[in-house]
Each structure stands twice: as C-alpha cells, then as structure tokens.
Image (tube, rainbow, N blue to C red; front, side, top):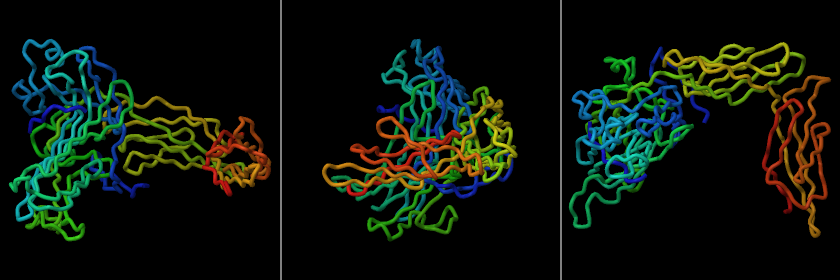
Length: 452
C-alpha cells in the first residue's frame, strides 16, 4: 500500500439489476458526480473522531488500527504507526492519519503515449497539527488523481463516483525536461461527526463477494491484494482513462497494445483495487421515504410510494406490499387500494449487509397537486398585475374533489374554482406560486410574468 501524505487542508438511471446475492450492480447512467450521502456517527470520546461512518448502502466502518506487524502495514489495514509518548496518538491507536475507508487503483500502459496512474479514494482521520493533538482532529473524504502522461492532450478520468477531465498542454517543465505527475489533483471534503454528510466518495467500495477470494471476516478488503469491487452508485466499479490530442478529437494511443482488451487504444480500464475498511457492528437499515401520494377517479385508489434505501434492502409498506428497486438505491411501489389510508407504514430490512430492520415510518398519504400554469399579466403605469393560476389534484373522484387553495403574497389565500384562480391589483409578485390541497398535497411553480 502506498503511504499517502497528510491533507494540506482541506437521470433517471437506466434499469439496473442484481445478478445474485452480493453481485455487482449493472452499470447505469453515470453523471459527473454520483456520490451519495453518508452518516457520520457520534464522537468516540477516546479518539475525538466519529465512532463510525455509514454509507447509503448501510455499510458501517470504524477506523481500522489492525495491521500484520502492528506498525500500520496491511493486511488488513494501513495507518500511520502510533507516536511514542503522544497521549492522543496512543488513545486513537494511530499516528498522523488513519482510515475508515481507503482504496487505490494503480496501473501503467506502454507505448509512445503511455500513461501511469494512481487514483486514491479515502475517508480519513487526521490532524491539523504536525503531531496528533486533542482538539485538532480533522476528518475528510478524499479523491486523489495522479497521472504521468507521455503526450500533451485532453485526459478524462472516470472513477466509481464520477469523472474529471484534465488538459495537459505540455509534458515538459520550463527548462524543457520531462516532468512527472502531469495530472496531480487532490480533493478533500471535510466532515464532522453527528449527522448526514456528503463527500467526494461514497458509497464505500468493497471486495466483490462473487469473486474469490472473499474479504477477510469483519473487513471489506485486506488492504493489499488487488481485487474486483462493488459499491459504485452507478455500477462503474473501475477506473478508466481516455485521451485525445489537444484538438479534442484525434485519439491518443495511451493503450497502444490494448492491454485491457476493451478494443480501444485511446482508453484503458482497470478493475482491480486495493481496499481496506473494518466493519462496525451493523446498525439499522437506512431508509428515507421521499413520497407517498394517491390518485383516484372512483372510490378505489392507487398509491404511489417512493423511498431510498440500500440497493440490497427489501422495502415494504402496509398497505401496499413490497417495493421494487432500480439498483441505484431508489425504490418504488404502485399499489391499488379500496380506500385511501390516512397513513402508510413503511419499513426496510437489509439482511445482505447484516443491518437490523429500520424503524417503521408512518407516512401521511396525500393527493398529488399539479400546477399546470402560473402567470401574471402586468399593466403600464401605475403598474399593477393580475395573477392567474390553474391546478389539478390527483383525486378526481366525483363528490369528493379536494379544495385547492392559492397562497397570496400578502399571506392571505384564495380558493381555486374549477381548478383556476385569478387575483388582480397586485403590485408585488412572488417568484413562485404555491397551491395546497385539502387532501394534504402541495405544489409550487415559478411564476411567468408577461409585460413586467
């Protein structure tokens, strides 16, 4: 494992499936940034760092201070060795830096336009001071990209959570000598304990259980052996570099001999990562309910329920049944019911990660309000405006149509009649209008102003 310097300071997806228990996600549509939030746990009073970090898949990690030689060398984990006589270091079990999660992908190609790359991905515990000191704890996620290139060009680096593009105008220094690390970028995103956080990496990569050997019991990898992984939120469990000349179109043969066998000489894919991380005692299955609405035209109704949970989770609702997942952490259920319930009870289990069931969430069910138009027509001086809004409810059952109400800029409100409302004599307009339904639904829409 390469030792790393301390920090300076800081769509709807294409359908994805699981090929089997623990199988890698099918690759979906990847955006430039696909990181998902993680939860930093409470402060461990012994170390001053978060006790654990839990990703959106429910994988909980503690800082790993286990090593084959007791000096911070893997397997199973890399960390700076304890500083003798330093109370903070002794209490934490490591020196200047330790890791909840650390992964590395390194490779080199051959030829006139060859590249050599190291991509480091981490969730790290360190200090703002040169030596460990209480009160100086600094936690962050890291993405480091270092690439030696042989030819000027435009290089795109795709990694499990997104991609970065770099322009290398010259491979020589100001004295005409070849220089290394032509691409050298480190992004550190600080986080603090106790809450949901978003970093530059996440979910954590872990050894693919479908590929032998299995990770050591209690760990997500052994910290030393290159291995196939899972964990990318869009199925990109690899690092790929592709390149063109500076004109942006002419391919650069960075893989002249097609070492990776992908059929392209202007790109190289590496699927082997070293990974380390120590599993914490597993907690509750993460579950966020993002929507619960109904629609009906008669007495019967259809529930539409939305949630986010680990890709391996089973999400269920009463009434309703079991959700379907898309392989990226989003789960959906459409269920017919004879009557609209006031609430639905939604919960999740995640046996694949050993999580306990989530607490049951009793979520109010509302209609879905859709604002079809929102505009204001203004007159000349003295300038006044007429606000016109139309909206509908997903509840269209005869005899039980909800009342829709438009909120006005002065704090008052007016009911929509036959789905429309018009208010004149306004001198001040809102940037957006809001409509509320007596069945609980709400909606907002930016206002279009004519003749402002």
